[in-house]
Image 1 (cartoon, rainbow, N blue to C red):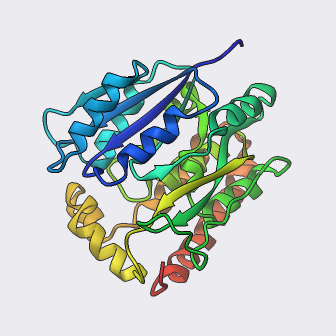
Image 2 (cartoon, rainbow, N blue to C red; image 1 turned 90 degrees about the vertical axis):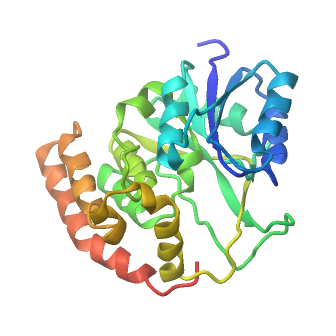
Length: 284
């Protein structure tokens, strides 16, 4: 394929402080065949004004404002539904992308059909742009791994690969964007059943961190005040109870042989409580 198109889904809400820097890093990409699906979710700050300013600057930015607040998951689903490009990636309104991100991801995905997701290394930065060396976001490349190893690495890893580039048809075929907790994990787990993840060498993606010394318990309380308000009573008060069920469902509807599905079932059942307990009480 010659010069395939990439859609960048950018759902934003209350992002006035850093959105301009994010959009600047997108518009500075060396690969230029992209469209930005910029969806504003009824912010109370100047986010909408910034969106309008950048949409007027570059026709590749397709801006829309939601009539009512869709919430995080709803807004993510909206930008994915809008995508009509060959490839797709999600972005956040407070991150900075390396200039060769799209180019290097496309190169890998075009040349290796076993790769379903290409992503860059991510580093945390604070509100002033300083690197936070004590906060790590480990990454992994699963090329050469079997299905069980890929799924185990996804289960135990950080989920920043969620913001990598994949084929739009692949992204739309999975069932991750549901109103439950850990949609990023569920999406990545389902994608790991379909192929490998490739870590590119284009540079570093920078993600902002706002919550100093926040523990696991603190984060859950914050989510209950914000994201979890849009969930059902059960999901809000027992946020992770559905996650292993969803992962098992992903495994058993996958095209993998039945013997592999049984191995994945054991991996999920054994690791789910360990993963949950390992996170509790930690400073994130």
